[in-house]
Length: 268
Image 1 (tube, rainbow, N blue to C red):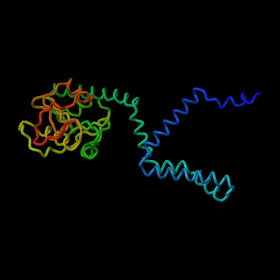
Image 2 (image 1 turned 90 degrees about the vertical axis):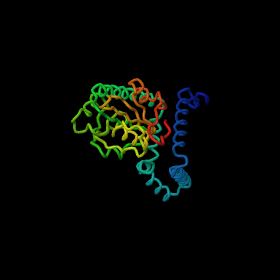
Image 3 (image 1 turned 30 degrees about the vertical axis):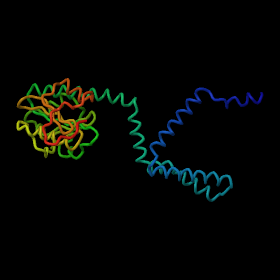
Image 4 (image 1 turned 90 degrees about the horizontal axis):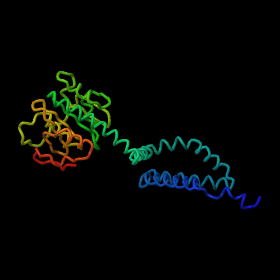
């Protein structure tokens, strides 16, 4: 065999190039997560220890090598503990990839359709309701005021909760993702002056929540059966089901809403 034949395994194939690109991309993403964080300093310390271990093997420094080997033996567990916040951030960013977001949009469309159907049924039945859909700002403190549900969002569940005289029909339903997190929650009333005296407690609570968070709050009036949407400190009255679906799916911002409070917050 010639020398060239012996060295053929060194010639990179297309699969090797793909692997190199994947590893390089993963390292790049890891560095993006670690940059400007305490974890970057820890990473440099780990690299320094690895360098010292190589030097100790090269110079046959038995004591240092033994100590470092003992440290590296439990290194995987230590990395999981030390880098826990950064690992959570990395997994969160992975969840924001285009492929994952595509599945989330499909699930979001299903949730929006269930909410629209449930709200439509409540409106036809003239059953009052208030539903808050969590966005970026978490609703944890308001969820504690109600009864934990943790049920999959469905039109049947929403209509059941807001059936008159049911134990939870007076409070608000909080939706997080594809789950009904809480029912019977107490929401803060708006502190701003309201020009329209016909607005009831549910409408004022919807305005109060969207003044403090970026939630989308849906109100069904039991007096008029009208559907209203509060978002960004504004209230959109007499909303149709098609427009409600567009708002929930993020297709149509609630910029056409008429301000009903003295100092409205900018709409999204």
